[in-house]
Length: 83
Image (cartoon, rainbow, N blue to C red; front, side):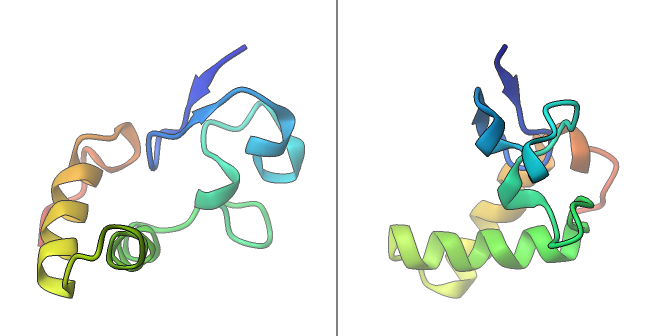
């Protein structure tokens, strides 16, 4: 079974991709807090900005713009207003 994380878009195909291996979750291990609950929008936004800066070499302003646009397309954040 393949699911797509509602909060970041990551494909999830094995138990290790899910928080605590719980394949009933709709979000991935990277979008979960240590207690297994899904991160809030501000937490996910900041994490995505940091990820884009680290992996893509964007400066903070560009990373934030890309992160806001990207997250706005995902089911978990459709109702969240852009900054």
